[in-house]
Amino acid sequence: MFKGSSRASKCPNLAKIAEVITLECCGNSSVVLIPYLNGALLGDKLLLSAVFHWIRLLFPNLSIWALDDGKCTFPMERFGVPPDRVISGSLQTTVSVGAEPRIGLILSLFDHNSTGLDFHFRPECRRISAEIWAVLSELASVGIFPKVKTHPANLMERPIGPPSGYFVVHIRALRRDELKNPDVCTLSAIASTLASHLLVPCFVVGRGDARDRIVNQHVFDLLYERPLSWEETIGLLHSACFFVGTDSGPRHLAAATGTPLICLDYQPSAFGPFCPAEQIISSRTLAAGRNGQLIASLLADARMSLEPHRNRGRDTQLNRVDNSRIERLQRMHS
Image (cartoon, rainbow, N blue to C red):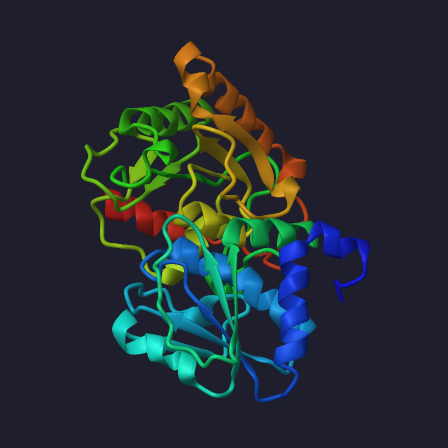
């Protein structure tokens, strides 16, 4: 599909993977094994759903196995396109799976957080390693993005017209990746200021480091509440007017549910989000906060996201507006 075309030069990683699969995995019983980047991280697992989707489109008869270290409770059946089999366990007990004779290719996609695996695979078994961010960028260029399964009964329609819904802010765990993390005060101020000026409820998610609860009549800080279920999390993100946050699992998850995004990063991010361009309201660098322009810019972005045309036509089959989720979360907070 890619070889010999102009697309091959634009998508060298996809071309190479497709060529090897064509040569090595032509039989119906062949398997592509894909280890997770870091099985403990929701975002890393979610991003691979786009890779699964692409392989399915090109090679519908091929089996996809995923190697999971068992540290994340994010079930694979919740991917838009899940793998056929998940091999889960400690790294020591799963690396020997490379000896499985049906495996024609081990596709290792890595980044700086990747867990190294020393596979004991057969000499004739091909292995390709590629940077996940390059592969995801190539997939985005051909219109393939990570997705999750959603059930219409668990969702409510995003409001069309004057803002009557809510937005979500994620405060990331500060112990990881300093370049991805604003200080808590910055994001707390963003959540409070946006909610107060817009008069729209804000739900703050994130179960990272301990911090003070945000006190604002329009902000519902879920840090110290019971963890949301998967259905509540998907429903909360999908039905939000927009999402504000840095590079993180929740931002990838919001992108996968189709929620409009206001992205905050210290520098232009190579780590996504991976979603259609029209879904991204804005990408702001946190350096703008030093000259007082960040909050003003975010307010303008948020107001634009609340314009009627921004949300029109998305999931219009969900014509029932159910406020019970907001009410339940508000009761949890009170």
